[in-house]
Length: 306
Image 1 (cartoon, rainbow, N blue to C red):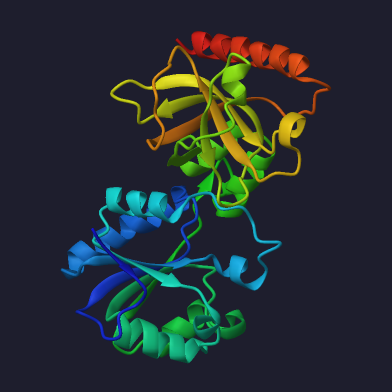
Image 2 (cartoon, helix red, strand yellow):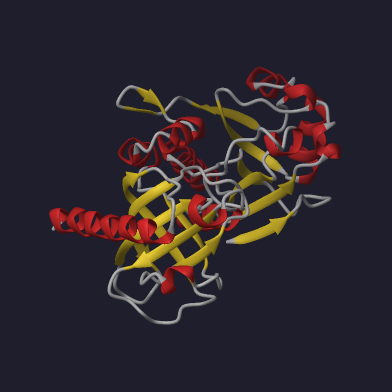
């Protein structure tokens, strides 16, 4: 898959294109990517995606923007797995935000992307002040065709990134998995920490979080990326109120029956079951007792799955 940071000045050739943020690449996005690949094959065009970083809401209101469900790298991996051939990651900035709907169509889609067929969601909005919509796109289409993706529902609920975030915030991992088509996960590189977990008898793999997490608390997890086998463990996502209240959120994972050095390794932490919310304890002894109880509860959870 070819990945381009930014949009070319002149299109290299015609493409079949879909546009969006694709945060989480949930089941609605997956349906769009499948339709993109199908249409591209019929039209003998390369299937391409135009996505944005940062998310427009992060640009306009960074303090109130929703948490990201996936990193850019994770999105790219899911695009690749869906059969996308080209991805353009456009930087969302003031210049892009100021384009009128007509300029976005003529300058970006036609001249610079070479679009011949485009697929968007039925609620797609674009251009300055989000003034453009599906109707605008269809009215301006002279050299390309436009298709709208209908709503995808799961158990009567419209699939959306917002719905996934709401499920994760409520600790409803089953609902989130139904919307995503898979369990929610966070992927990142293991970094050095304060080694507090090791001193308490529970050494952890620490993953720094660049953005606010979509979920917080203590979870039973599966860990991928440590060889052929999938490991199980307990993960904490949050600010660790007993030891470092007010600090940036961190993902810490205690991996069961595992004691190898994995600093720098990229792992995928799959969230299976929420055990509890974060709490502040009066001392480290109380915290240690609670961690031991969390580990026992998580082991019981995985035993029951066997």
